[in-house]
Amino acid sequence: MLKALQNNAKDQNYETRKIIRMTPQDRARKCAELMFAADSASPGLGMAITDIAPGAATMTMTVRPDMLNGHRICHGGFIFALADSAFAFACNSYNQNTVAQQNQITYLSPGKEGELLTAQATETSRSGRSGVYDVTVTGEDGRTVALFRGLSRSVKGQHFDEGDTAL
Image (tube, rainbow, N blue to C red):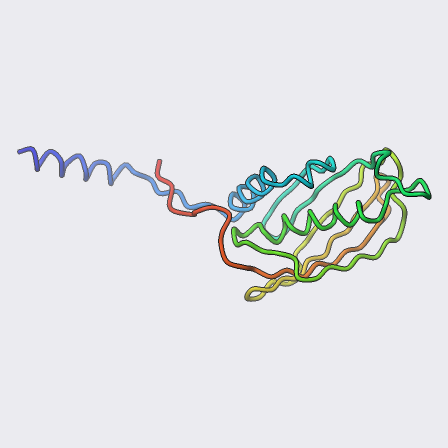
């Protein structure tokens, strides 16, 4: 009798249990949340993730007085850091640990003190373990501040275990 009750409870649990598979958008969001929580550099520079999707990320950063160079414009290293962070979140959005293999940047217009810069990263190509991502950094007025291209390489590991989640 006890065995029959246990089997009945098991069958009912199986029937009412819903398996939820993570959507690509959920996966991208969770990867970004986990990475940002472990990242000291991006938040330390005042960066924020404003949008995340599979293969894409948008981040912002306000140019602070301590980010200005001798010309009183945003130091290129900070613009590079913003673009590189957006690139990192975009290429890590598939829950596969991914690192930069090569990056290049072209500066087109200076960032100004107090200005909110926006870096929008988009996936151009992804095949096997390699990816190509383009990042456009813009100023508040919409002008292009910099163009960045990042080449990525997937390595061992994931940001989190993707076992099925039951309700």
